[in-house]
Image (cartoon, rainbow, N blue to C red; front, side):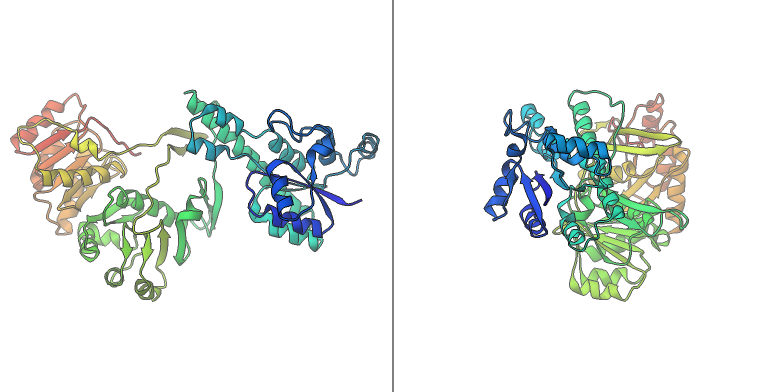
Length: 511
């Protein structure tokens, strides 16, 4: 008896070629709907699953394969005498391979809000076929990913479709259906404004890392959808766990401005930033804040890396650079830096602008989940003036940069920006005045001029001491959310020091 393969796919990439190879290896092909049509158009002989069930398709295709002749052929245990006898009595022939992937639910919710269309893109039959084949994996090969077709065909042709091979496909099949169901549940909770009883966070493996934060820890990079597959390419070196977390922090800041910008990050915190159309000038300016910490840091560059910039960067040790593109001459210069890692992130001349809808953090025994924070440039433009002196347009531009950097840096944080360059920053402190003072002390040690700078704090000042410290450092304009019981005390201090201050009304804690 010829082996049978059931092929019914939403993603039809490579399906006809795969079916032809299976047919050449002695398989009889069974198919449905659009897949059946494509197979026949490509010269692959295939049986309509409706002929197997005797019902054809029902209810506009809602029911095609939900029938004992199909599921019995997949599920009966070949090594169980009672199952084999029952299958023979009922005329149920074995199905030995199931190739199915599911209706494009995620793609559908991404392009339409039509609930009827969304409902119709919830797969039922395909889901059942995959789970049935995975359950009986010892006897049935299950294929859900078009990128696996060649490996499956080769294994079958060489008789290497052994237990371990089938286990790997079985696990992949359950992952496929599990994430599909989780996507539906997440969407329904969101659409109907319900709190999920079982929060599902899922990603697919993009890179197995050499190790985690430390060498004794295993590490992996998982991606939402295909973000890293599409946007991330290793050009030189090997990405580490810590590289990836630092690069993420740097990109968020550099990409917040749709202009040429450079952000340098060390241990998750920015230690340099400058926004300049001249990248070489931007690099020099970015180093002014904390060139000491920049040593061994990572840099995100929101522009194409040129030969001239590569020559500048090569003068110090930078561990990793992320940019949308590198000129060939730049790559030649960097090739001599054996410890330098280069990552192409995005397309064209800008880093990708990706905003994840949710944010989560592991805590002991679980995780906390929230909507992602969104920092809007309009928060400075729409802020309330609370002092006698108003900021100038140039000061507002510096405040916008300081505000974004403060919002994307560990609390408590204050950022000082002058002429579109970060000149001082204090982050992760247990008090806000400590952050303000630590930043100024660091600036003094780096001989970085803070006089005339704009300062932003991601949360309100509980006392006037931070305002006093800012004045002592030469700050001329401040942005903060406001909302403290002692707001007037801070306002009075700003007026005393002739500092302009605005309240955004929005707090951006990052813990």
